[in-house]
Length: 275
Image (cartoon, rainbow, N blue to C red; front, side):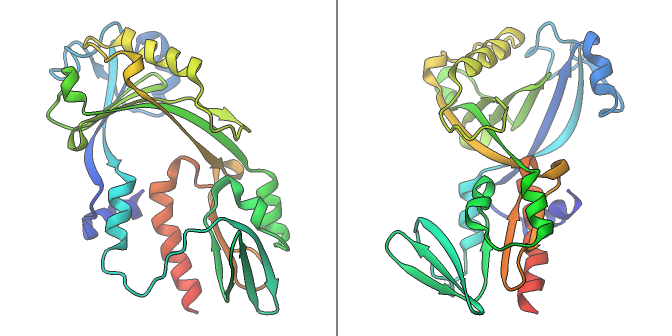
């Protein structure tokens, strides 16, 4: 996290907004959270949360960063002219002497070094790898998740002056002031690669958020159901580095820390690749 914060402070990248997360709970669940958060305040006595939250009584406020992946990607690509991008479906990677043949549906690409950034699909493309990395892969698991998203929320009367996340117990209401968007979620299903949104679970989460907030949510039907798959590393640890006896590398297992660990992984791999 400190590495990410240093990156943010020095580079000032687009697509990253500072805000706050409010962990909100009630007295009956206090023991569950007290190990993570040192001190709680009263919801009713807080000028911001008091008019927004009902029934829940305690909260902890902490700084947070809200990332817009598309804007951050555009910023990362700025000023780079010596890269050729290919939008291909890779079916196989075969080691050929000291090089690699990257096979796609319509083209074979010869590469001297390959970095797999393929999340839960990493096992499908990583062959003849080290025992250490194979052990790691054997103990990783995919985790599917679904959430709700709605744009132009000001037309529904939802408009605040800043970006924030209401983490009510284990569910989240995220308001993104800069792009006029809210997100609600999320589900979490271990050892699952289904990318179809979990509608029933999302409806339950929507009802949960609606129950404990005092403002009027837009109708469920106004939201878009979205889904994705995270890759939970062994003991939740990420992995990056070389995975065979030549020049095959990977970055995977980032799980919930993709926007913090990824920058450190890139820096470390850069040093390896330059040697």
